[in-house]
Length: 76
Image (cartoon, rainbow, N blue to C red):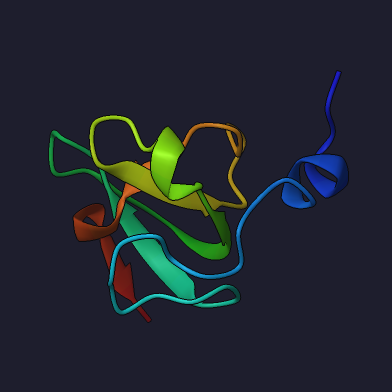
């Protein structure tokens, strides 16, 4: 089983698609139903060739292995 520290080693530190986020930013996540969660920290980005459904930002949340879309995030 992969823990958060090992998982972070696999991530990119630079966004694969231009956005206003960087590793370490504090953000609020809004899901598809408009419910807000957070604050969370951006822990890394997906590799460009692995982006699926526009999800490429990883957060320090319970499901840290599941990326979210940049447009679902608001910087604090």
